[in-house]
Length: 403
Image (cartoon, rainbow, N blue to C red; front, top):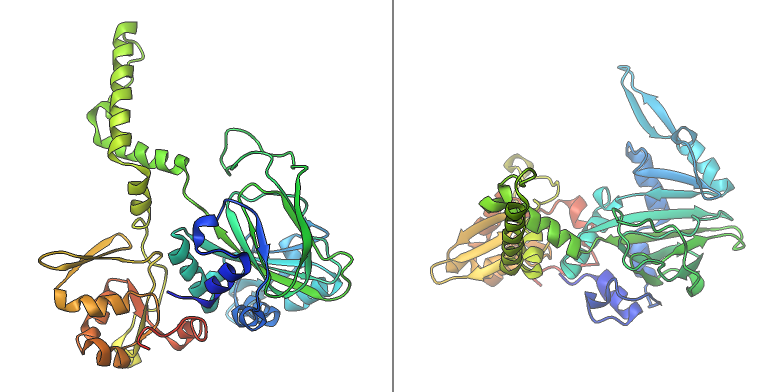
């Protein structure tokens, strides 16, 4: 899947792929004003907030770096049948933003098709799960105090300007659940500057940073933060612990009350089995299994009563694996293994490319069998019906696969 956002990020940061993700701070600019306006605008964000029943912690509002109580911008809306729904009070929110505040919307990719498609493209690119959070800061509002994130982030400035200070880490690769607290900021200032529309910044996990609009006058700033939770040795060891249940020895009780010699023997045998387990399932095996762990996200399954199926797109978290065997073709994705005849291979490569596929165009390239293959992939939730709404998330950002 060739997404314009990925091309923009790589050009701005002088990257040739995701290999630098998490390794070093980077900031850069590229010609992308039209791109960032296509991804999300402040008015589109506010329209999304207005039409959804959002509440904390998914939607939060801050003033002078302090989080406001949800009652300051969320109200109970009562229907004529007496049903109570919590929704953003747009008048209250407008007053806060007019005075200077920061609106944070987490996981916007759940609600917005453009950011959904962007996050999926970034996942296929990085082979890690990605979440998009959007920050809208107005007028002279201060941002958050110095803090660090427990994941790597790519920040894309979408509108306006914001000043940043980035410092190095004070504990190498800290984690959310860690053995030691990481509460003392580093004194090593890596970069200070102002991000403008189209600018891109990469902040590795553990790097301290803060952002503000103070001293920038009236106006606004909006940026999207793409968070990448990369797999670590800790994740691998946790995965191995689950596999240890396959071995009788690991399931046995520890010999608390046995003689010291017997306890020592058990300890030695456990150590030997642990080494064997580690050798049998290396980090590469874990990373491959991780991509197969979860199913696909929510989508509208095509119903015949809704009309003819015209277009589809693959919606798996990661690129499906297509294996050509002697007898058949196997597709591994989202915890499933599907088997097809060799005749389906051209259709599978097209339909599982991650790009939108117009079936009429695809049939001219790989034959009419593509329609049946598409139906199977939709039934198995690897592909979905490309509704007009979902299609809008790809338009001008991802090329149609059949072109």
